[in-house]
Image 1 (cartoon, one colour):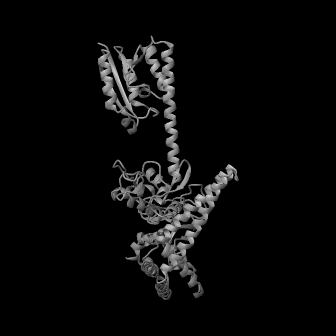
Image 2 (spheres, one colour):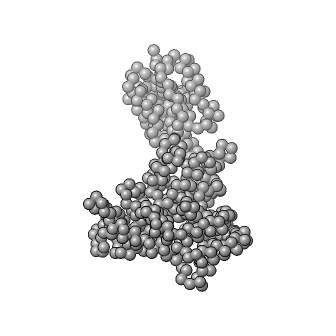
Image 3 (cartoon, helix red, strand yellow):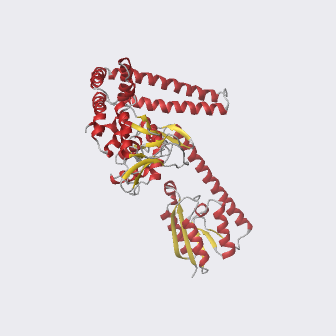
Length: 511
């Protein structure tokens, strides 16, 4: 019996349309074997690229042929279905020369064995070289097409988590199921001081899953938070392009998330009963200030001395630390008179919100058009040879970065907070109640209020220096009535254009 192996392969759907389908190759192989008195004892049907780093099925076929001396024949469709690269060609020659195998090509009725002449080997080398060139040309054209697509603002690859590739338009569309979880991941980091592990665990409990249905781990969350595609741009071949797809988060929230990640410390779950953990860093060495239990009863906070021990007050009791937060909270607790003045002024300003929006939007669109015109002129200068390549690259990146930032601002201006007045009143009411709330709160509630007001506290001996969050940073400037109007301007603009920033306060506002 003349035992034979049959190997058929396609690397794209287009090849199937061109008559190279697996079924068509298999049928030709079977007919060839019948005509040549060969018996197919094992076959491989493979959908993969010849340039994959590991052609698993191909290597399995080679190993099988080497281990079975009674198998002397291997049938392929044509040369480029066997290989398009020199590495696999050498493997085939090894089968022929050292293992006495005969290679058959069913479509062309050609064979090659160790008895073949030099002309046959030469023709096989040429056919492999032609197939290799065709593969390279296809790859190059594909890369050029993807680059052109990127420059037109269309993401040229498979959709990342939170998006889907539309079967109709072939473009990115928001995944309605996963996009809200993506947005929440950014907010948990930017506003609620969660760590990556905490975000991963919380979103898993809330139903967020990977494309394969698994928990999205912290490394994937980190990658996600660093991907500009979620604010409407995308990175391709080391460059940032402005995308035409719908963003899931604003550029403002994206930037706030990065500020939080790159801050002096990141939070971790407080499992040891130390409510003020992750709020404070040492003012001398910037290490964390964490709690420690003494005599199984008393709680003291101190620098971790991760960078080495230093002078300064080392241990502060939880009672004393709690008292140190109080004047900071009181500093941003608005008096009733100012609260009412603010609310009335916001009510008047809310009437002109749409006019403000129109003016800001018009200004931003004019800036965008100016930069876009400069970019077009830059391309003309390159075509006319009026600018050197290095300078062209610098200016092109500069203008494209400006366009991405301006488009983000335009999108934000088009989506102002329609509830600015209501949100403002609630935030003001909270600010008016902050100190009374803090005085009667327990330690856990005090820590939550302290975290709400400031993103970090630097400890120097017995003094805490806060880094106030917006809008509370505005309220520290109320030394005199003359400062009220500038403070109102800042607060009003924040309410109108920074809709994301209101979210972390709403839960406390309503309590």
